[in-house]
Length: 161
Length: 312
Image (cartoon, each protein chain N blue to C red):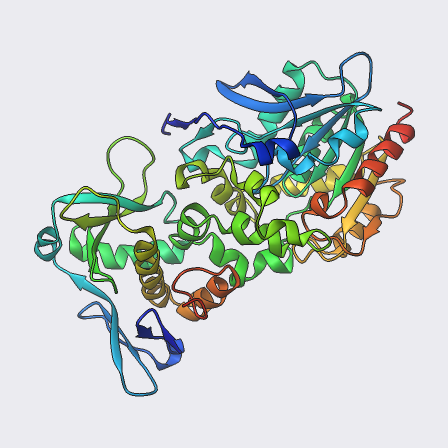
């Protein structure tokens, strides 16, 4: 199924390269598409100095398995996870700071102050969620996410593009 | 806990106002501004308190209020975090005990006596929490499509779709950014009048107070309050509610949207078994979870019958 410019395949067919922080979706036709690519702080900084919060999770520990997966991702990276999403945009996942609720937030790095296109951000976040679910594992999977997204017609979910 | 509160001035557009032609009232409760409707006059009429669930607000009762106000005073609050009430930014604020405490203070502050409670979805645990603690101030109860025990329904225990909808990071995306419980969930959880929830002024009415991610925190918090296992938050509280059902002495009626996959008709039968002298549920075959959307006439009829049961 062609979707959002990349090919979705069942989770069982996916190969991961956690040492590089890359998920590869290997389509039936042999195509390979990188969905989420982890980048360094320096690479994230190069995306621009402006930021926009696009998601706030106040309770990352609501299910302990998510907190465990996040700890594993964040601990070796000084609490910041920088990644490039399918649109090419760069995001930073980090503790929510400043005033207001605590938790973890995802911020878009950009080189301008204009609001980001919400449709693009939605699709990028969807790719991040697929990537995250497969790292949490157990009963959580990108396939389960996709089925839920299809019911609620989420941008980026199977059957929505 | 953050003290930030989301409060915006909401202009009700004419097409929604025609559906919701009521005067807004506000009451300060626990330091928050709580919105409610107060229709039908106060001159000695019996008082009916209409409690909504998630992700709705008093708009849910717009077609029921005009049908019952010839017989009673109808009060329909919006919980803190919902509808036109204040919306604290801290998700930790939104707990079942907090909602129950605030509704208790709301009823007390308004001086409402011998109330008849009408509950659905989260209105069930909240309203029953009030009723069991203040049984001497409750004259009757209409219970619709809800639950009052800790064991989760099959729907609430499944990853797809329910638990995925409010899982870490997925929840803020589905429920805060994309608002899917309103944009899609209402439509999926109605039958007879489902067409109204696809687009148009009814859907616009539900959307109205939830215009941004920051205004939807309570919608995400409610699902996370549902216990699934012993030891979870609210497990013991829900067990206490279940045990309390056997102590109910005020008249109760049950009305159920039969096609509800969240709280199936078995829930109605369980309430009937647990509540002494409770009549058989009135089933709405072409009704689902948001039964107020599907069957406003039948609900108004049951409320009027309940007023008679209560000798009001």
